Image (cartoon, rainbow, N blue to C red; front, side, top):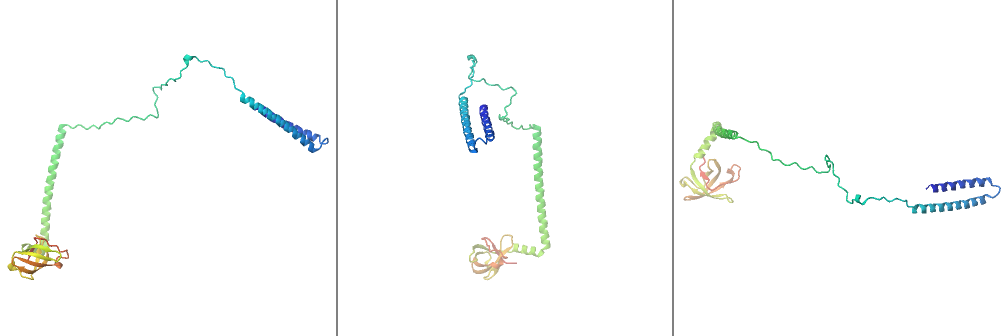
Length: 249
């Protein structure tokens, strides 16, 4: 590389010298002839430089540095590298930590005396709960009785009427109910006290009168009655087998 730089510098030096020479000898030749000569000289210089550069590249590529051989004893040659033993305090940062073994929780030991004491306390609590429940039931019964008594005192007419309905004699019982035509088939209990066209009440247990019927044809111990829909206190007509037919008090 130093030879190439020297050649380039020499080229520029020759070019500058040619220019100086050309200006100093203007009178001897024309401007056109001086430029031609300079171009020819520059071409020759470039050709030489190219040859020198090619020669240098050929020599540099074919050059092989000499390396003296090194004689190594055969007993020192080992194709398998010896393992490297890490120091005792070495810790691999990429190694996974071993999980800690699971240890079952230890149950606290309970002595026989403590167990017996616990069972005794549980028995006492159960007895106390049963006693409290019995007392609550008694209080609820007393409260209901007082409430019923207060209602009877406040509404003597209704209480009296309810008692009269509950004590009314049964005149007939419902054997069958035709819901589509609202017709009842009755079993007459006291036929001698009944007449066709009579209005009677329907009683269900101790709940009072739920509706009214009008007796139709009577024949011995059986009869037919028509249900009066408007007498069911704006409720759907619902008559069951076994409902009692009484005289409305």
